[in-house]
Structure formats: structure tokens, C-alpha cells
Image (cartoon, rainbow, N blue to C red; front, side, top):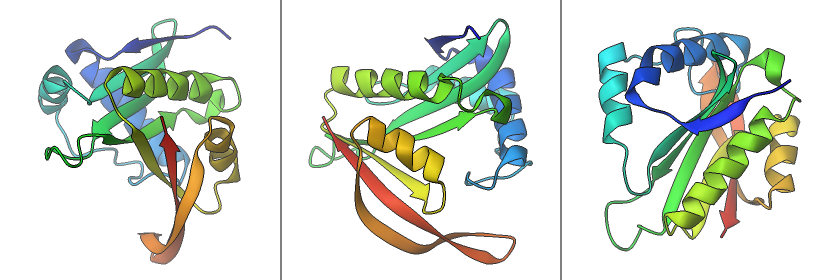
Length: 166
């Protein structure tokens, strides 16, 4: 399966929101469900247009279809935290295990290095062994455990905190 990873542009807003809505309905690993994110296409366009510095969104496309995305977000506006960023990643379930997540993650790591980020952080469900294995393959290390990080259908879900030191 061929796909390309590119930096998202404002014209990707509608497809990106649709990707997030679909992926949110396919797994309970995300911070949202099938409702997707509460943004209009115009708000998402503005968000994508405003990304600069240590902030970027990348998308994976198989032909014209968006199949995954990763957003890198600088943690702090203060000089004392400017060396840190976090990220969120989504891949359509039918594309799991096909290299899309690896390609997106490598792109985010490369971007973070170029942006001068020294610490790239993430939170992942403790029972999401596939994702944890992916992150460890790229050098992320567990730095902590966060009980009751969020709740799905009223049930507590624990997360692992992981960092990559660039």
C-alpha cells in the first residue's frame, strides 16, 4: 500500500475532521469518540493556518484519501518550557500495521528535532500494547503511570507517560 506524508494545509481541514470522526469511532484509545472534535471546518482551517514554531500537523494520504495524521504541539510559551512538545496520532483502523503510524511518527520526530525540541512527550493507554511497542521502537521510554487518566463509558482508564529525549 502506498501513501505519502505531507504537512497539513488549511485545505485539508474538512478531510482531517472527517478522519478524526471516523478514527474516534473505531477505537477507545483516543480522547474523543465517534463525535470527533468539536470544531467547524472553518475553525480547523484557521487552526492549521496558525501553526508555526514547534507546532505542526502532518497527514498521511493513500491517493486522495486521508488515512492518518499526527499533530506536534509545543508545550509551553515560556522560555523555560520551549524545549518540550507533545503529539497526538490517529490512523484509520484498516491501515493499522501498514507502516502509516511509523511514517507519521518519524516525520514528527524529524520535525521536532528541526524545531529545536529536546523532549517529545505522549500519553498512551496502559493496555494499548501495539502503540506502546511502536513508541518504544522509536526510543520512547516510560516515565510514569497515570491512573484514571480518562474515562470511557464511565470506566477508569490508566495511561502511561512516555518521553523521547532528542
